[in-house]
Length: 96
Image 1 (tube, one colour):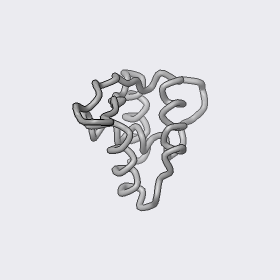
Image 2: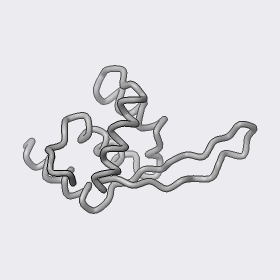
Image 3: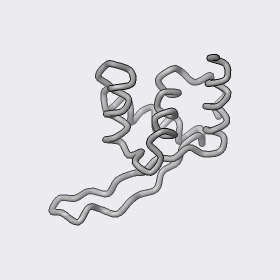
C-alpha cells in the first residue's frame, strides 16, 4: 500500500468486491455502490478508485472472455488480494 489511509469510497469499493465475489465487474460494482451509498456513483470515480487500489496491490482483476453476442465485450473481474482483505477487515473492526 502507498502509506496513505484509504477513504470511505475506496473501502466501499473493496467491500462491494468482497460481497459480489465472482460477479465483481465494473457494471455490477457501479450498481451495487450506487445503491449502497444511496447516490449516483460516476464511472470515472469508480475507475479511478479501482486503479488506485490496483496500484496499491489491494485488488487485482482477471480478464473474462468477451460475451458471445455481437459487440460483446470482455469483462474485468475484480478480486481482493490478501493485503486488501486485511485492510478491509481492519477497517470493519475499527468501525465497531
